[in-house]
Image 1 (cartoon, rainbow, N blue to C red):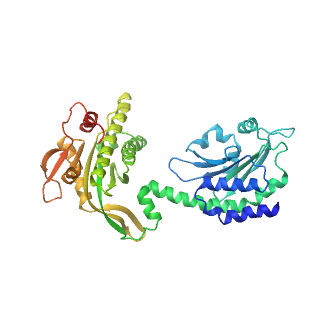
Image 2: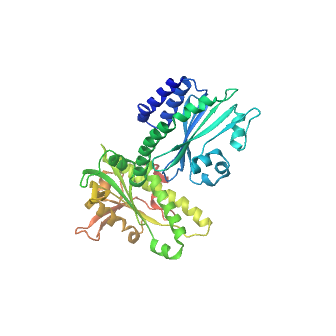
Image 3: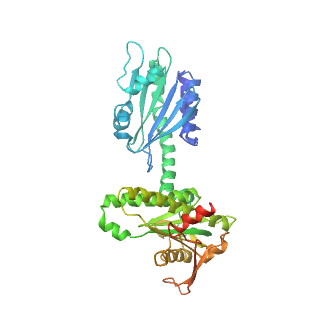
Length: 406
């Protein structure tokens, strides 16, 4: 049996490290261990990660399912009784494993989860720490339903896999963290470009896209009247309204600039389709903000106001900056124009304005507000809004309620 276990270690360091993700790795590993005689009924790989919404990820394989599930644990679970009174605490915080018989005279059910495992028909359970090169502690758990439990030889063989398994998981998790961080801080499409090698200063594409610019009204006054923590919570909720609407329509947030948002909807084959997606995103963001304001009103808080602008144009999309500090962004006259149009929302009494180029490509008629002088631009620009404003509600909401989604 020893030689067959050595084959599992060889697989880990060879094909195993090429597994697409943790679910594939865990399924393949468990399947191979069962094939070489390990009486495995349940196995999990529990990993700390770096993600804004997830603290840890658990890849759980169960023999009766024949596959692995990915279970994400949100930030805050480390303060719950479920975690504090479990074997996982010793793994994550001390790098210490243990073994618990679940049946018979030697049964140890000191943690609530062990009683649950016993009820599920498991008889023996042990944990094995996994340690990354940077000191990060992760873990693995192993359980059987064999009446006599694991043999000492079974457990010794699994522990022989500790180093190769730690190495392979570290490589895979580092790759996943890199992709996750780039998605979080740059956006999915931009992050993929950077991860694929687009990191040279000056690397860029000239693309046609719809730009969405949004800006919160009265931010300076808010900054002076509420606490710092309250201001951050407010900004997070406001940005969430915009970001969820943009992502739902296939756009990408490029930047949060103070209290402003810059998003992009690249044109592929059809400019009208990109315009529809961007306008639907703007309407969705306004609807989300209206719902947020209802909650704020119930708490006696003032409503939030913001302005948005849409423009269709050509932009430079790529890396700019210093040699050792780059920014992947869009620049060009189109970016300046959409920012100037957004600034007209307040004087024109509107929530959403669009450029003449956007209006020309959009498949429905929009209301011209005439030519407007834009700061920093030589020539006045014609600006458009959604038609037939209803003064009892925002123009975007009134329009979508009347006509349906674009």
